[in-house]
Image (cartoon, rainbow, N blue to C red; front, side, top):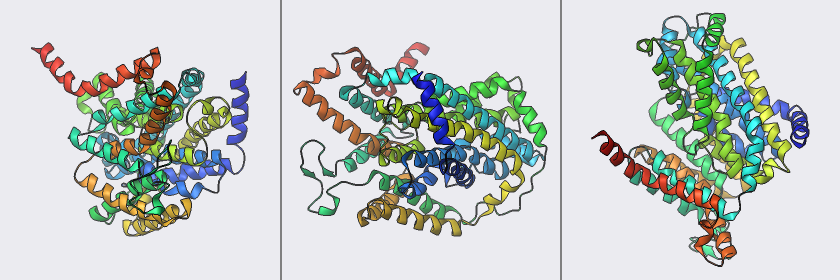
Length: 497
């Protein structure tokens, strides 16, 4: 009964003014950001985040999650029309989307993208409603020891998400952790690493760090690489009706890909950039015409797009339950939750359940709106891929700077975004893991605070982390993740030989 009452209240919140208007604005902004290669959901959310300060908490969060959802769909536009994915989540869409466009079936592909994205999003949000009572029971079992171990579990994911050199991934993660120690210590009021500079006594702003890493870094890369996203005029031909029909001809692909997206999204550090390739590979594996993939096969577009929007719902599970972001976008969302006093954990599923459900309702409605927008304004969507980045870059730099200044009316935050923007640029250039860096920044304070509380509770004994079944299971999971990359290959070689 409590859940039903919370759902009714959530519907009222989601459809109240100005929340419903912010939801629509967020979807439009998300589609716009997503369709511009180099922008994407995390950068767009980072730009908008400081501008949400005057808004009511839940209205601000609904605006952010709407941008997130809209960008997941928007990334397919450039992928299909010009073979450049607007976001990493649409990378696999280029394999068959662009060949379809060249064959005169751009409308078909865009319609498939809209329908598959909407169904994928709806599937995972409905699943979130169904599993939220279970999440409540799990989250209520967590105290300081469990939260510390969950944060440590998230940090151990660095060994998995570090593409290429694991050493570089660990260095990036430790650098992120180091930045979180600047300022006053959480338990004892002592200053750390301020070097006599009183202005940073309160530490570096988490939100400013994200703006620097996502907005400034991306603009530096965009300025270096290109001046225009698409040079040639783009014509859109094909059949919307046939594209819609084709999507419903592959229901198993849609549902399976949505589930893959949700499952991968729930793993911290993974996200849609991983799930769209896994879903694409699975669709190719079970297809009777696998040799046609990469040449304009509809299932390729459907699988990729259903999975990337399915990831949105999945990534909210660790973010809302434990404060562990599943992706760069949910890292920004986590910053928004904390900034507006909506702290991840038990409260979001008990006393603040209506607010949590209103996010789900907004995403549910948002996916229907994406479907309508995608099918009605589809012939106008090509123009956004032709915007000259010489106009985009200065606008975003100004918005990012003003947003950072608005956070605490503090020039330290402006210097933070600029410094981390340049640091992020060189990290990207030399292949240091940005995901590992973000995990360090996000999870560092959670780990430190809960470690100190746990040791206070136990009188300094580390046995508090293994004397109950739940923390013991988390310790085992951490050990498996840490040793897996080293032991796994040896076990596979031993078995194969």
